[in-house]
Image (tube, helix red, strand yellow):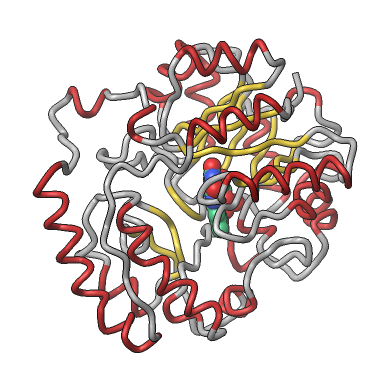
Length: 354
Ligand SMILES: Cc1cc2nc3c(=O)[nH]c(=O)nc-3n(C[C@H](O)[C@H](O)[C@H](O)COP(=O)(O)O)c2cc1C
């Protein structure tokens, strides 16, 4: 098992949209932890290049994270409980109304907004083939529980399968499905809430309590994620039963990360004073620094991932190119003030070193 036998109990969170790089993954793995590439949103050939780059830089194990599309997700409990997802015409109309509300920003930044396309799978099948072919040591999944055929295929290839969960019910479903490791994500996490279904309200239970509750029911290794920026918090989570901690935000300002300049500056900007959980950027709940864009659109965005993600994408790209954080998705966990402009190995040492 890779995650249970790390030299230091530290997993560098996959961070899609730019921050994850082969350099960052290799630096975390070289520091004794487990570095990750973020396969979400990346075109498959680019992910293949990134995997090759990590193999070239480091002989240590690393992981790749993939987003599970709705069509491949086998977790449907809240649907059964009557919390129906937005579908069909209603969904298309809600997305179209949200598109209208984005037009002033698009015009200001000089970009065209795409017409929303439903049913995007993020090239799921080809990405799965790629990680199996490359025998990436660890593959983690977010936004869904893949079916048994996928887990069997990974096991046959000797790949450790990890699924992100956000409450006990999801953890039980993932354990039942036979995953090797759980990432248990708490409410303080930066970026998307990794709920297995996009409809239900994510749990707000404290991460240490959640880890202890999941630990009680099973011996599957747990990686605790969310708001971890200090040694004291990491210790508390390891004491609660976690095998390792997964850290994202604290790595965002490291030189190895691909975080844009505007994003880096925003993380250190004292005028941005809090993080909130919002659907404004992607249609899925995610924790980000609160900006005017988020304040104005939070209540308007429909629960329509990934259509909303694709709609805001050109705005975010243009904002990064203009070095302006106003229309950037500034994903950040509650510990963002602790994120320093220091090498990744220093962050690893600060959080889990001797
Ligand atoms: C910028 C950013 C991008 C993220 N992208 C992903 C991703 O692609 N896949 C994933 O499983 N989690 C992603 N996450 C969530 C992390 O896996 C992890 O749960 C989170 O970073 C932990 O909280 P922290 O940021 O407070 O350390 C992202 C987090 C951030 C901050």
